[in-house]
Image (cartoon, rainbow, N blue to C red; front, side, top):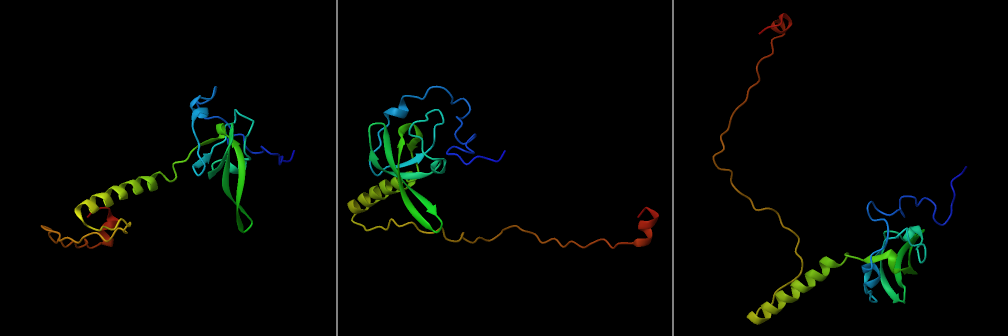
Length: 164
């Protein structure tokens, strides 16, 4: 029989629950708060069939644009031929988790604000721009001795006899 092209075709492993994560869904999944503008990862939970996104969106990151009672609207980029289209889909909260994609950025902003406040207290102006890592500093090798290695001459006649 030929392979089917249904809505959930080829999702045997994609939508399966992880090892030792089967069974009931923890309440913390439902108690999380999502705000408009948050980054979320779409991670389909195969145990919940309602509000399940298409398999294309599994593993994608998007921004929340709408929050409803049981679901959230997520804006995801999708490449269609040569164009990147912003798709708006509604996904139930079971299939979504908070993304960590801009965690480093938020930490850097906090650190830069703190550095700027400290510099302002000292009366200085500092640059918080990221600088590329420059070349490693040079050094002199001390205590190195030069050893000359010469090859042993190869003797064909003695090698054929089996000894040297």
